[in-house]
Amino acid sequence: MVAPTVRVQVEDFDVAAEEALLTRGRRDIGAVVAFTGLCRDEDGALAALELEHYPGMAEEEIARVAGTALARWPLAGLTIIHRYGKISPGDRIVLTLVAARHRAEAFSAAEFMMDYLKTRAPFWKKTHRVDGAQGDWIEAKAEDEAAAARWATKSSDPAQ
Amino acid sequence: MVAPTVRVQVEDFDVAAEEALLTRGRRDIGAVVAFTGLCRDEDGALAALELEHYPGMAEEEIARVAGTALARWPLAGLTIIHRYGKISPGDRIVLTLVAARHRAEAFSAAEFMMDYLKTRAPFWKKTHRVDGAQGDWIEAKAEDEAAAARWATKSSDPAQ
Amino acid sequence: MKAVYFAWVRERIGLAEEEIAPPDSVKTVGQLVDWLAARGDGYAVAFASRKSVRAALDKTHVNAQTPIAAAREIAFFPPMTGG
Amino acid sequence: MKAVYFAWVRERIGLAEEEIAPPDSVKTVGQLVDWLAARGDGYAVAFASRKSVRAALDKTHVNAQTPIAAAREIAFFPPMTGG
Image (cartoon, rainbow over all chains, first blue to last red):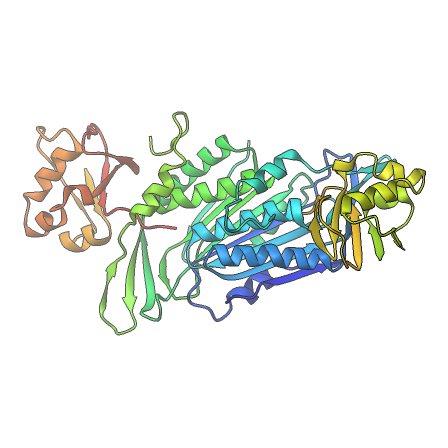
């Protein structure tokens, strides 16, 4: 059984180093999918994002969704790193890294993880605007709920 | 209009360096998907893969499929690197790197590129076996044809 | 039990966390929301739209019908926007 | 015109490339395959299963019905296994 690596941290992460950790010495991995989520500047309006999280629950919830992914697809490795605190445009926010024998399961598991992180992991984003105005909390999107819902099955919906 | 980066080479590639090239100075990219294809040892039976390609056509065909991806999804950047020559288990074979505003199109474009590379790019893999026996040419898989076929649309099937 | 608040729920209530002692008649998460909403203006604003506030009991997502039972910590927060 | 061969098509024919001069009656890719297959044992083995051999005309995928026309290079190879 593969144990996922889950980290919730202020610091930036190194995608290549995490990928090397996951694949080093392995000769049975045919596919690695690395998804990196970055902070956009919203056409110049955004000065920074402030990410708030629920310590403890964030790690637990990500690990729980990771466990569902590992039960659903035959994976060789799974790493999820999610940052919190103040993040500037162009900076990395989140990494999902999946290693598998074949590409189809690596792509599916990575997309599944991201769809569920968006709607289930206890993080909230507040915007800081370039004009100095107090920004708003970013609202959850219906399309993210829909993206997560398409993975639901009777036997393995992490929302249950 | 985004110009894809396409390289067909003997040398290994550096995923992090390619990712930095694609995103450096950009503040409008929210998602990067990096797919790395690696050589598996087939449970210890494989000593190496020998990748043969059709020089000129390989680059042209990859660029053509990349153009289809760029026309189909709003992408911020697209890099494909495919190696040829002798490749050992654990070594990288292919990289598809997609940058976009949102994750859904980055995932779709990356998976589309890989499905089409598998069935359309003129590369062939010969196995070298650990026991020294002359290996066979790897046969094309029906499941790869099926994977590529699911992207077909009336207006944008690169197979037409 | 301990109540913890996040994002605009925290800002509207004006507290990140507090000890609460609801009466025995408060049995479910939904009943606890009703009880909290009556505690003052900030709480009323925070819980004005019941469906916009999510809850977790001992760090597990729950809904309004979930019994509070012996939970030690309840959290209230807006729909999540991670990733 | 130049004919180029890859993978087991190349191995069976025993050549990576050659100049060929098919007669004017050879108008399509399929007819060229028939003409090549009659050139010798290696060719016959290479083209034994017509559907297992793919073709490209001037580096573009084509099928058996495609006219050769003024193409300068034709390639024959097995189904691709890149990626």
